[in-house]
Length: 90
Image (cartoon, rainbow, N blue to C red):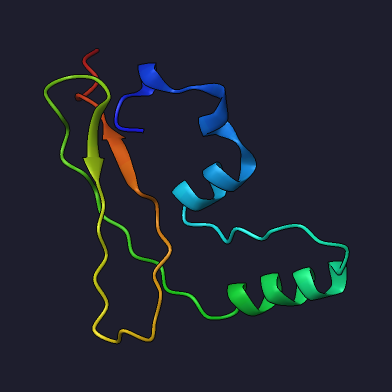
């Protein structure tokens, strides 16, 4: 959601939140062991990238994020974007 005031209840479902935050979305089935194995295998290799976003001029200014990988066989699951905030004034 590029505007937090336009969020609807359907936008807050667990699969949607998992996807938008870079998590693995698993379709539930009765094979819990297989789901756990997929989760563990998915969590094993990872890299962490971070940055300090510049403050915005206005509150809740949305910025999309895009990660490009040199190897097309790899997948990057990341947040879709973030809401920049102005500097806090005391």
